[in-house]
Amino acid sequence: MEQPILRQIIISFGGILIIAVGFFGMQKMAANKKPEPEAEVRAIPTVFTQKVTNGSLPIFITASGNLSARDRIEIFSEVQGIFDFSANQFKPGVYYKKGAVLMQLNSDEYRANMRAQKSGLFNLIVGLLPDLRFDYPDAFQKWQDYVIAFDVEQVLKPLPESTTDKEKLFIASRNINTTWFNVKNMEERLAKYTIHAPFSGVLTEANIDEGALVRAGQKLGEFISPNIYELEVAVNSTYADLLKTGNSVTLNNIERTKNWIGKVNRLNSFIDPNTQTIQAFIRVSGKGLREGMYLEADLTAKDEENTFEVSRKLIQDNNKLFVLEGDKLILKEIETIHFMEKTVVIRGLSDGTELLERMLPGAYEGMTVKRFQK
Image 1 (cartoon, rainbow, N blue to C red):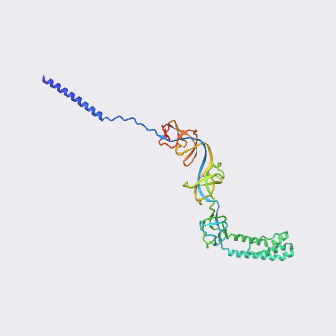
Image 2: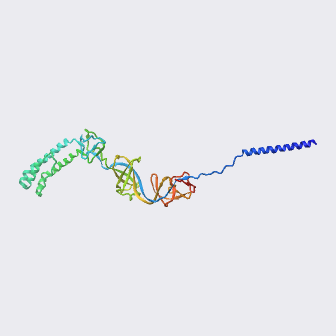
Image 3: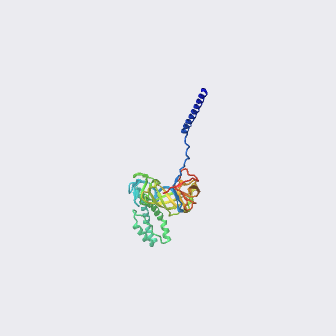
């Protein structure tokens, strides 16, 4: 009797124990269970926008080149002699006024030879006078006056004009004309021993020192005017018909910290077959300009109507950009008119179209955005 009761007590106690262990086990498992992750909330990017306002925009062509003086000469000697004198020190950077002596070569020997030739001409004319007195009395006085005024130290004067054919033939038979032209030629050559400055300017190159022997045909230096310069640039032949002489041009140094205003002075009608460009020559003057200086030119080619200017960074695939329709980004095709250094002139968007002011990283068509409220 006692055994069945004891067995029931043990079974009841075991069942209670199993239920307790199961309960505590479920509690522990519930405590260790990770919470369900909440749904990720994606942030909507904010964008800066701008509205299209179409208008007439000038197309600028950027070209570059080196300045060169408009007035420049290379100094060569046509005669030979010792470099005797210069109005200033014959060195690069030295300034000469117009008409000043750039270089004078020693001409003593040549001058003495010319005097001898002049004296020979004088003797020929003097020997002519007795025959003229008897054969051509009407011509005698003018030839006598010529002899009296003759001076070997002065510039040779023109011979008296013959009034009759007989007088003309008589003078020619005495070799007067030939001798006169030979002496005159020597006078012209003597002038080449002195080189004068054709305009006020500076030496940029000097290849010889005073006291040195100068040979005929030798290059002596270069001389320029520092007042007016020309910039030669190559321009795409597409704009050949649009550029005009007299157009204003803005010139900038490399750093774009200084600028000057020039004008298109000349246009070459020849198109380079290799580069398909034409030469444009821009005249400019002003403070701070130097020979050989590198400058960039902004040439105004023409005005494009119904266009708008945007940053080059906004252009996608060369002919598309993002516009806003509601709160979505949409890719629209546009016509690119002209690319510049940082911007591009476009056509194809209507006035009031809203587009990005700054490019949004990772932007894609259909992307939801919100506008920045300024």
